[in-house]
Length: 88
Figure: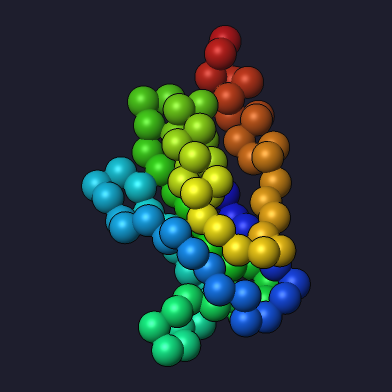
């Protein structure tokens, strides 16, 4: 799951610490005076493991929902094909 933002210098809050089965990747971010700021384009992306694709997707979106900044947006349809194949 990847956030997108066309703005610059918005403070990104509530970035979770990496765990054994989840991580937030950075692209289009910058560290300024101890704060993580947007730097345009695709910014944080959350990844998570789960016992199924649906579970991993749900966990990744839960992480994303906790990350906060003003103009962040993300798609909600990522993984739907893999989840559909998983249910057969």
